[in-house]
Image (tube, rainbow, N blue to C red; front, side, top):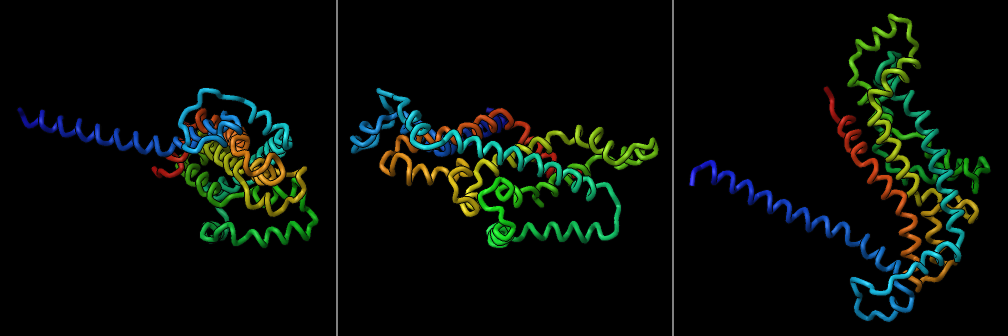
Length: 284
């Protein structure tokens, strides 16, 4: 056996081991989702009678999904979450895109200092500013309103940094040439920079949608009116005042319904997310 054949065999064995480890890891990650879906299609009686958990069911039912929508206003929670997510994401894009453009292209006194101060805010955990935000929103009498829900989430230092780094990769000669032609900054931003950096903008948008959809602490703190509950904090309402703590299959059905939009969103845009993050973190 030649040296090249031995090297090829070692590479093949290494790939097999890697694939086996990745397969085990994938099963460990996906099993909770499988168990969640499996439990959601079991009847309450069948689930309660299982002294030893069964990994399959021969009598699936959609009764739990009907219970999830009829026992609590899950549809209202969905609508509230959609309004909160769309409004927050749209306003955030309006705020962070011009900010990233200013830090990447415009020259003004103290720009580096301001940007450094911005980055230093990333060192502060979000939990530390929750009380300040709560007091501000309360003093403005915005509790139990969509404005109170949305206002603290309309900007992000990390997303400004990600876009700024992406914008900085575009050659400055394009900007100077556009200025010579009399192109305004806004026109250059929307006609040149945003089309080039579309993967990163899409990534930021999707990540913000996921962040808003999964938001729990702030909505739970600022709303105690069920009319403004989101799906995240509506889960607690479902558990306490819906179909009871013992009805685990119905609870799992509600969780499946709430999780499904994000899973579908990630599957559709997973390549855009990976591409955008890679572009945002690469200089050159």
